[in-house]
Length: 630
Ligand code: ADP
Ligand code: MG
Image (cartoon, rainbow, N blue to C red; front, side, top):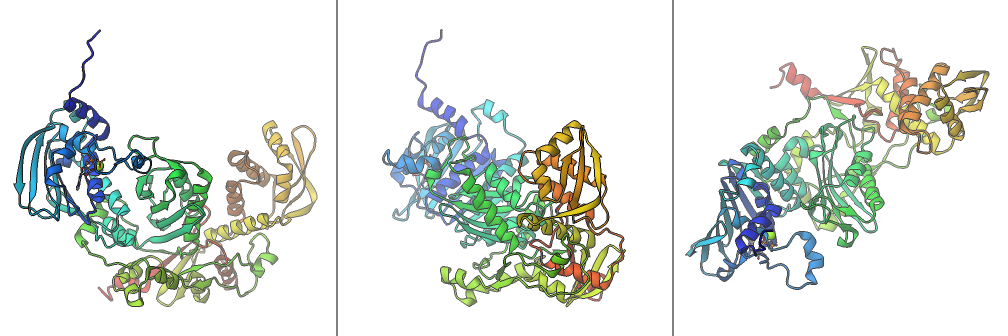
């Protein structure tokens, strides 16, 4: 057996570095977090070669006293924990006093720092954990760390680094996450001599988002604000058109720290249900605040994963917070070509524009909350959302002016609120109207294109509505509401249907007799694996066949055999089946009826599969294309 030895300090640091410092991005994270802790309002990060050969972090924070400069590289040197009692509140924030010791042990490090009180600063050089020199230096207040040749003395670590561009991407991710969490700090990120990100540091989250992701994203956001007994939710969620193919654009923060959490993502995505197509994930920057006692962060070494004590409470917070935000918004999409999907393009945009946006963008808004579901006469006459035969007025969502309360809270005056900077966001946003119901109902009906799309005109807008998608949405919401109200759907048929099933189908039906009854099917067993239907739902305007029953049965058993009640997927199918088809000529009266029903829906913007129902094309767009204007 080998003899037991005590590791020297430096070797211990190198081993510790293995845990804390994995790659350049981890160095940046530790350094920037230290700068934030030091009260900096400006932080610049510069890297070369993905940070492998060079990282610089400069801040205007408190600085480090000359006498302490050497000391901060000692393992367990920290100014942040004084007593064991502090551990409770601070340990979760990652103060362990080993970051600097670790970085210094695996790189060539140089730190220059000056406190406000001191007349001069100091520069210290350390190589592989050994102090090389310390000297006085003339420098501004604050601290600059330069880390060169990361992992030069730990080849095993070095070997695991990825391509420069990949490492640079990780660094960029870290800075974006930290910048979003700290809108009061101006972050600048310089990569190979070029500025890639510059946030204003004006305490305004929307301006910060704008400077990171660009105008297209910033103009497609919906504010989310929600409060429950023990949680607060704030931030922004993306309109459906900026949804992405993965979850990388979900920025979720818990008490200011970036986290990943399955429950939060699920709640967010569920709130978009039927507004997004499959495999599309919403963009969000969401801040959750709660007491540190209500979660546990020690499940993952990088501390991204957290476990909530009460997962239901978190789910409900995020679900309702986001759903409310979505319901208060016009979701009519602009006809213009899609959004930039690729991230580097977006960065490019924000780089070129490099706008310093001033505060208060967030507050200059009016939102409306739909009243409780409106009933239209049409629903009574045509319980399944068939085509209405006459015109009828519907009540409109009530306008609530939220500006007043918001501004009162923030102590802002009107001029501050409606600053000029607000304009570009509003004017260029795809949202056409604050009150789409009114807009659509007041529009002139031009007619149909291809017997499939309804064309409307109002002011400078041309609206294009997919008639099938619209009717499908109407049927879906109507059915759901009727189910909720436990209305009877049953309609007795003169000649009962006798249907032969497989044994598993038969079993499924028998286990759900009461549930089938709720949607209008009166079913009895009728011999071996056979059933008899004596009544069917009233939403079949166009005739019913046993095939329709089998289809519902299939979908229901595939998607909701365990839950009580019919599955949403089965309802989608029913809604889609009976809905008005494309390629059908509609009279103006029919179009009018469809519009009235549509505008009374909770979500008139997307069909149940998440496809858009309404698009709009601006008169300017015509003029541009016909070269009347340039
Ligand atoms: P921790 O952050 O856990 O305390 P670190 O090793 O990251 O441990 O830092 C050690 C100490 O060095 C900090 O507690 C702080 O006092 C000091 N320090 C590090 N970076 C800065 C900075 N940018 N400005 C001021 N003080 C700093
Ligand atoms: Mg630290």
